[in-house]
Length: 223
Ligand code: TIU
Image: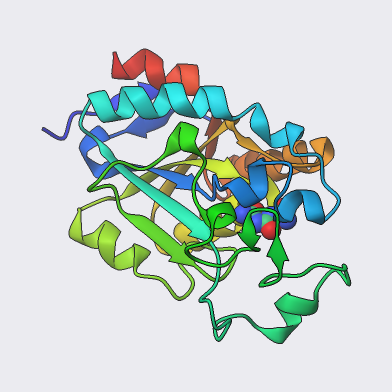
């Protein structure tokens, strides 16, 4: 059925249609969340992201129990790095860059241990995984086609990082006509001020890019 549930959110409530809504979990990869990965190599404290693991696990479990659509994304590149712009490779001027061998294999390269999704949120067979070379999940992927085929019109977006891949994806989704609800306890940034600002930007101006809420507000209506 196309039942509508009302989720308390900002700047106003989100009219949630479960069978037309996917849970889109962005880049919950070992390279971003574990101490030996790309995020840490950029100088970041991964502890800032790990607080999102518990809330995402709880939401994902409830989502699966309801039989709703879940889609996972991963940021990473082909092993020959042919999809890696030179500008992205050399960005940061660090000793290590994308494609180099780190403690969890080649950094942000598909098939390497660090590129994979953390065990806490590992996809089940049948849950699509979008491998993307950019920050946004729509750029150079088949995400839009998959959402169209599944008749998905709304996205509940979680994952990391709030101001980079989550924000970029929400903006891309918004331009394609999807309604996005971002859950603040399920998205994380290495920088507290960016976490706050990125969420403020989504819900400002009457919800210019979408809605912001917390996972317990969604869990309340799923039960
Ligand atoms: N997934 C994602 O956000 N990729 C990043 O590179 N994020 C940073 O914050 N660096």
